[in-house]
Image (cartoon, rainbow, N blue to C red; front, side, top):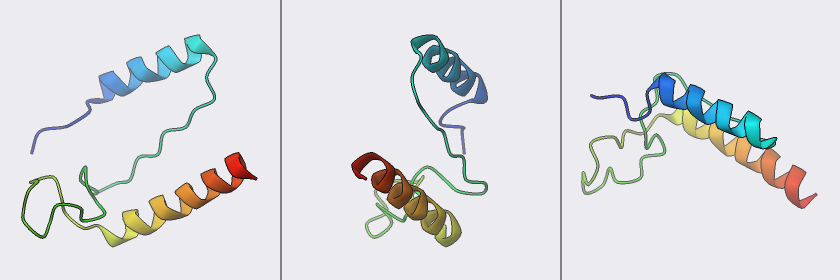
Length: 72
């Protein structure tokens, strides 16, 4: 399976965000595909859709922490 976002693109994004003075964060989940929550699995609409329970759980916790911080 091809890489959806090569690390060179991530480095360029990082540099752009730093230049803009943006407050940002990037989470990378090992062994997870692009759609690791399983979206698209039912009808096999996306070959990148493979449920990865650990990454789904970690990303959900990160989402809740982000919302708590932003919405306080």
